[in-house]
Length: 167
Image (cartoon, rainbow, N blue to C red; front, side):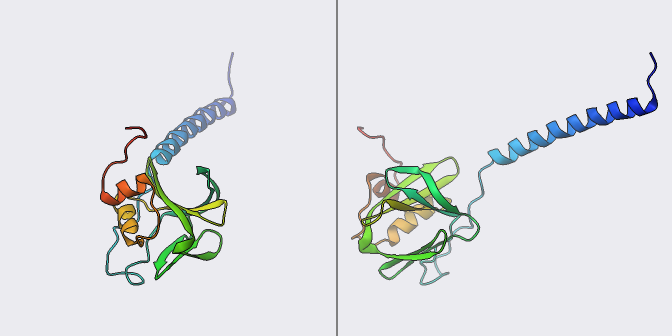
């Protein structure tokens, strides 16, 4: 049984293509498993009165399901605390008064440190990924004392690790 050089070259190209595709899948798997690096450390003397907060992403979620996002913005997110108002951008820029906030909660998972703002007049929440636990504590310290915090948010504000319920 003899093979022509065209058949041998085609077989070699198939083997090389399969090897490259397996290498690409391995490289993609390794890249996607790495958490997104957080924004640079926040300097207190930058931004609008020290209250323009660098963020990784902003989300709009549902009040009862905090990990499900209805909309997200990681290209041009914005989160700012100014006077008695909260400015944020998911699709377009919005502003809410601090007295409209029903509750502020924190959630963290692999590579994410989120603040969740629930509003009194909306079934939707505003979720902001701040990128580090220290930035979460800093933002919580900027909020006025009239804004209600959940137990997890109070623990994060004090720098304690969150406790499990019932402990």
